[in-house]
Image 1: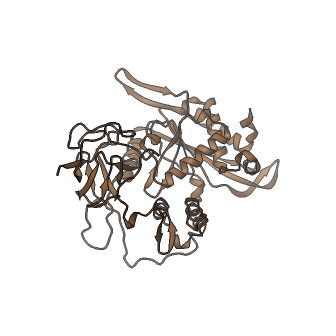
Image 2: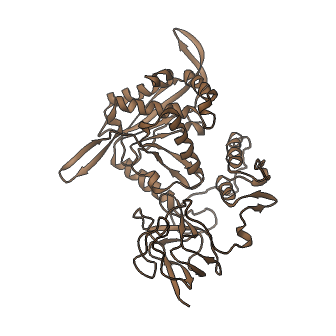
Length: 432
């Protein structure tokens, strides 16, 4: 019986290693070409790994949680033939060993179907302690820290849906600080970079995957681009009224509308008036140059169960208000489910970080590499606000940001933030 070895491929982004997060097969399973055999975490995202071979899984060569280099043998398939050359989104490996550098069947599109023998643990709708939920929903619940037993199901057959899990997670955030945990018995807890602790008085967390990539990126950005940070308070009362009116319009009935939508549109409008903030500092053979982009790939910093990622909305400047709302909603759901692809995180031009969702007012964020600015939206709170010498209640937020001082000077930074503030104070400017 012929035996094929599947070596860990490069997913097409020039990455050198990945972590085996979860195996989707076990020894004895029968698989077809493009069946998903594992989930791997690269430095940028969680990726489903399809098989280039058909046959019977003979042996898993690495364990879940192991980080291995590209080209490392991870799986033996018995009775496997040559890799299919016309598989969906597929490119054949360079040799019979499966050590080619291109991922076969990359992605999780509709064309990739799992056709291997079904086992009890793989039933399409599985029960988790009496709760009926599909495997993707159960995985989402694990990533968000949601106990399915606490979720009210809304599916037609009584199953828990993705929206049920996401809604429960959002509601849980409101109550997260009601109870204060007891102080731990130990006096110190550190997160060292050492592989193993010397004793049991602290916990060692390996730095890998998304955390490793984030650490490398922010260090490089902080010590390469000289950051300058500014902020201003804004009366966002009209923004709150505008959001309320949008929610009542039929064309926005099926999409989430929030102040972040107005903030994003305001930033895109302000970029048109100060394009230097949408630039990049590039070192070339003939010297450094500033590349001013004539488009906006709007990055949104997203805190996910696997760490901070910054996917971006391509050509956001071309989108209508509703199209931008849909794009923001899809970006958020994809990030929560861990399905953001490396391509979604590349080629950003300027970034928003919504620190208001964590109850923070302002900050001095680190610029995303390859960009010239990042703008933070703080919490919107009702505060006393002075208008024409009178104190009135108003919905107030703080707009803050950090910029590459090599590219943007203080006058342009101030004008840029003032333009964002102007739209938040009077959203009717978006109609101009």
